[in-house]
Picture 1 (tube, rainbow, N blue to C red):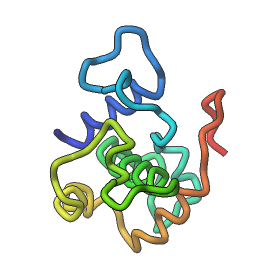
Picture 2: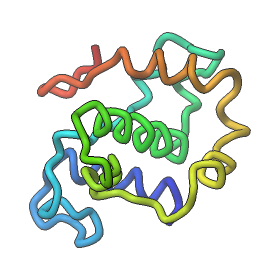
Picture 3: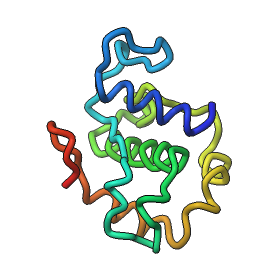
Length: 128
């Protein structure tokens, strides 16, 4: 599934729309761990990334990585993966997924995600 499509389903799940797309899995997993990264998360211009030029595939990739990190922050059993806590689990390994957006994400990934992890979306939709 393209990252743009996954991001669209993530947005739908977070917005809790009536009659959700069957693919978003909203009824099967809590949204506790889902972090929907938006363009506002890039307001600090980390790694020189202009927020207005961030595309849905990059937002989907960043949402997936931060959601996995959040899911891993709670204790897991020895045979569990953070992937079990989300409704989105690409069957492709990380490097292949990253190759889809690598040209759009300059600089160090740790620096980028360290910055993105500082933002949260409030219940009113404001990013702080």
